[in-house]
Length: 170
Image (cartoon, rainbow, N blue to C red; front, top):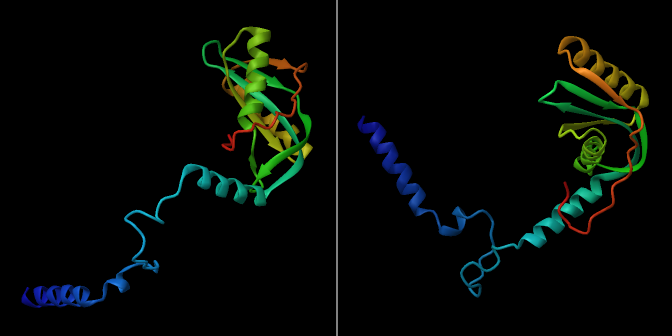
């Protein structure tokens, strides 16, 4: 017990004897700075840095996608055809920049066509065969196992969303 207390006291004495600059994580000491100067960053600067980093990792690709919407009230599943959408922005290889806008397009279409409020999901890939298999799997899984009533919407077409002026992306 005394050994433990002795080692703790020795450790505390060692830490307290270190110079203050050794305890800081490499920050430059400038006595002319006022309190808080140099440590604050505004929201605009953070968003610009985030967007520039995302822009470096983003690329324009042609994607194949389809949408599905589930009705929680009526056990309905609305599903669109697989479509090719040109020049869509992907970040970090698999994040679709305007995914929520594509989902909103399908939800708005169904709201106007069928007067339904639904939860929409967009599936996408760069390979058409992968999307055809995924769509068949969604139809099989939800049609047979969960017993959703399937409604196909071949008349729906995706359109590329307009870029907003707001630097915050969805």
